Length: 348
Image (cartoon, rainbow, N blue to C red):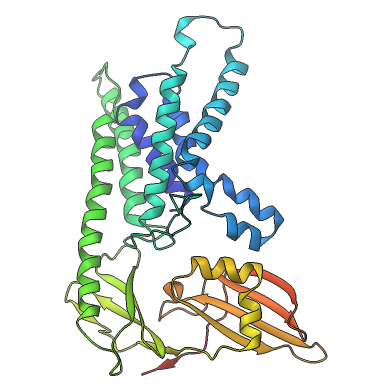
């Protein structure tokens, strides 16, 4: 998920009642809910290395307590610097409990990332298998709206109450935060139900007379009934819209077919590169595109795409990879591309 959703989830977890159990619960939970993404520091060594380590050990069950310890250690240092001359009992947080809260926030990060199509590898280093629920987008406006409303509306209510002279001894926002977390779970339940309907609709038909080898449905943001279907057959891939409300496959007759490219010495060399191996380990529906470099250069450019991010109505593909080879098929350059070019396709 996007960083803001993680941060707001940590804030709601705190306001749901954990902030009443110890001091510094809120900053600890907010930081710990996003801290797993500290792995982005790997991008300083290049986009290929950064991509390889993203959602790695910091997004695993083994890594949760390690990241939690870092967060609590950071909070402890900040607290000590601020209160090093204050020895009153009221300024002493319960550090063991904060560590537990930090672990809970770390687990929430893994859960949120699992709900997306990108996925997580929670059992690393014992297993490097990717797991993904495929039910919400990385940026999901519905969830953001739920979380923001839960944190903002109680403050507005408190402001209105103070204006009319109503006093409350208990802090506001606990009920709203609990309801927001329940609404998140409800959103996932609805999405999961519609995802199953979309998958069932895709399974009930064939494609250009061919039986699917495998198929998946990936979410659009906001609309829980609109999905992007990807089907693999023996000879080609097909992308299309799926309406889970109907349910109907390719209701707008806008499906795209991409025939599987022939394997060559060039594509094999690109796939054996560092980025090629990493990308193929992560991609669920990989496809490659090869072109020769324009003279006077000699060599080839191999682009890797994952069809789960190639929506039929959009130009370009995020999370594509580029491997440049010289005329002897040695790797010259390898990098990720935020907005790659569209792979060759055909309409039907």
